[in-house]
Length: 493
Image (cartoon, rainbow, N blue to C red; front, side):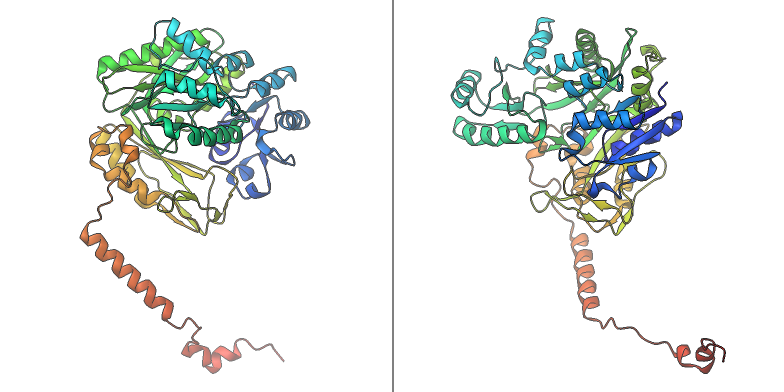
């Protein structure tokens, strides 16, 4: 087993990894920049190293050198940044440092998105129609011709990142040019690669993913599916397991297809196989995420497994230690992302210092966060502030616990999306589990505010206005003027 692990990430996932390492008796080294100095992961690690490179968490050479200097025998990349970077994994391997994730060979395979789609189709599993290759910004005519051949609506995806922040939906050809320009720019910023490929779009649709874990000894098991259809800017806002709308037959078929794809690609460690479900109930494989996912706590709540521990054990050469028959999927778990952003103002990020940060607890509730009162929320990174997961034996029970957990938050100093989350939780389509991707195009789910709530808001606003006008100068209490009070503070003569 490893002695020291360099956590090559930040925020809540760095905290998550460090805590598992502490459970396992493994020393940890954290990274930070000047804006991250107050983050909880810096305080929990055994050692901290300041990043001086301009590329920060994306400088592969600098991270490998830091690992050498601090004596780390493994690097955990978390998610994002370099987690699916083939050259980073290869640099770790060449330096004799274990990369806690897939091998560089597997990453090279799954990062070729079009080749993977073709390979899976050859295996007899349905995939969306797609362009024959990826296109750079300078290849506008070729991209336009591919779009005409594919038809509309279609999706533009990053060749290096797949479905991500740079993904764009195009409904008609007149908008293709401007949307493609923005997508190229976003892909270059996010992944360092501007290339895009095209896929047919299914509208409406549901987005599903199956969690797999595998080892180097040929063992591969699934840990159930998750639904991630409620998104903003192609990032999941809410996710739940099990998917509430699947039949038992559909669920078994989905798991079977995911395991087939996982074996085909040689999945190892924690991998996620992603699908889209069209309006006719047909599954289409879309891509593989060969890393831990933001939503992994949902699976952990249902299975009782620690997926970060599994990743570390597999990277150390150990077998999984359990079979498919030994995996028990219990109850229902729902997760929401609490972001430091203003959903009522075009989702603008809201960095700043947290004056107050109270998070929920209680039965069946889990919160993953790097924040605390007095912590800074940096402007440079993703606005994810916390993840809240609620579990119960039934979906109705999990939903009730999540409503309670969201209401228990008390955050001041930054804006958050908590009010929007509360509205989503009360939206009829979500309550009944009948939502799909059209839900994302609703301007503000559940925007109708009950009259009694409007009355309460008006009273609160009036009281706040009155308080502003009250003289806030200090008042000297009567007892402070007594002789005893003055004498007790005199210095002896």
